[in-house]
Length: 324
Image 1 (cartoon, rainbow, N blue to C red):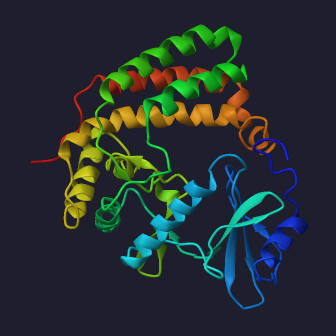
Image 2 (image 1 turned 135 degrees about the horizontal axis):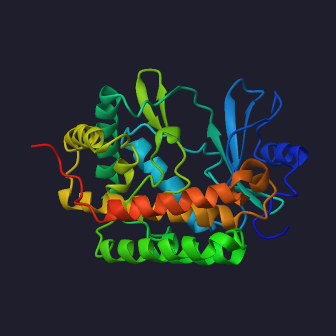
């Protein structure tokens, strides 16, 4: 099996893996929207619906995956609604033909509406409850959000990919270096806790009348604001109102360090650059050129030059402050 590859993960091997832990599929496999891992939904003979996730080879160690699972179990024990792995004979992580995999209950629900203040109020309380649990201890094995990984390593991955058009290389890397320099200056001496790590609308569901977190795959150490800022959208005034709603609800359950508001734009810059680096790193996976074909087009890189210029300007503005 080649590095990062899912080439040997056939439908038969998926079913064999699931059967190896005593679960037997009654329906076919429905592939779910996941590029980093491979995720499939099915109905089992026991009448329950499950989701099986096969972890991308060589991305996480067993210790890192088990620490993610332990965090999910800790949250569930504290009655924070999260989709936690299924435990079978005392285990939540399994291996078959070299692939690590986990079984989850299948949970349906409505999509979270980021522009709905009532829903943001509910979410703020939920993240506050999650962080109150998260602060109890740090991760030992999972990584920390850092400029080294999110900016410098991402730049190296972009350069190695040769995907930036030659005619745009100078303009792109010039503005990228300015964003990296400014972000690195602002993102330092950061207090961290355990995080969901990728807390956006796609990883939050309304299940019945309650919100529920899904997918802790990107869980890591980082500043608390990381799990809040991705809910902000629209112009500055809209973001201020959304932020005020989130933080007020958050503080009902967990103290919030208001000085972390200055990290929003650095974190936004880090996410932008890290995303490009991630696509470049995964480009030899056939699923990526097939689903992200625009990443190799000149127009995309022209847009990124403009987006990075706008982000540099945002980094140089005064940070958001809560409404008085």
